[in-house]
Amino acid sequence: MQKVGKFKKLFADFNHLNVMIIGDVMVDSYLWGKVERISPEAPIPVVALRKREHRMGGAANVAMNIRSLGANPILCSVIGTDDKGDQFLELLKREKIDDIGIVRSKRRITTTKFRIFGNAFQMLRVDEEMDNDLVQADYLTLIRVIDQILMKVKVDCIIFQDYDKGVITTKLIKEVVSRARAANIPVSVDPKKKNFMDYHQVTLFKPNLKEMKEGLSLTADLVDQQTVTEAAQKLCSVLECKYVLTTMSEKGVMISMINNQEEENIFIPAHMRMISDVSGAGDTVISVASLCLALKCTPHEIAYISNLAGGLVCEEVGVVPINKEKLLKEVLTLL
Image (cartoon, one colour):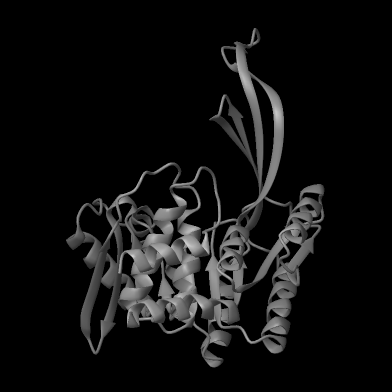
């Protein structure tokens, strides 16, 4: 009963947190239709369009997860002054997420991923994007906006949600981490390849196996717990971070740390469930892990709860935020 009360209080305390999310945002555009014939122009199916749907993607999906968990997301990014940028702001408004941290630039386009579905199966994806780093003027505007927010709002955690689209740069990482450390704000990272080794002295670093292999330039696959442990501990040492939370797909997660020069690794196996779609699971894991980190949960609790959350969203079709009540019920059931 003591643990039940503890986790209920933990989930209730999520509601008092302000979380800054810095990263690449995008519009996920879904085109749904029916396929009944093959094109006479080429051997490809013709999709008769029935429905269009637009959702927020990238770092904005982390903001959606943070909000669905009861906390207040503060999303910081750069989008274009184009029609898709207008659409993104409308989506933010619809979801009741503040746009205080969104910078608009004439030098960028708003990243958009078009997914075309025929007879309920995804047939094609078309990406419209720029992946070059922010120019100096846009970088300075973004860092100024971040500073203004940090001065006005008590931020309990900062998340870097990196998709290698250019919003997050080496200089931005260094400046934000420096500010966070000075203010004693924990920083968590969901990395991608380009900036992988630039996240020095963050609190929690969350790679998956593919990102870890590419980021460390490993030649051999990470096929077992031993090789994953060695790679994670290397990251702990090189990046000087407190925790490395490695997601291992259907195998579960591992959280690694170095305490008083002693290596420690906690492996949490995946809970058996029916998997429908793994899209967005990483966004959910970093969201839950970051809230737990902000509330000073133990490493085991961080890994355990975020692992369950990542599995739960895989039961849903498409990219959807975690259901807080459903997650708490599962945590309490599996105690």
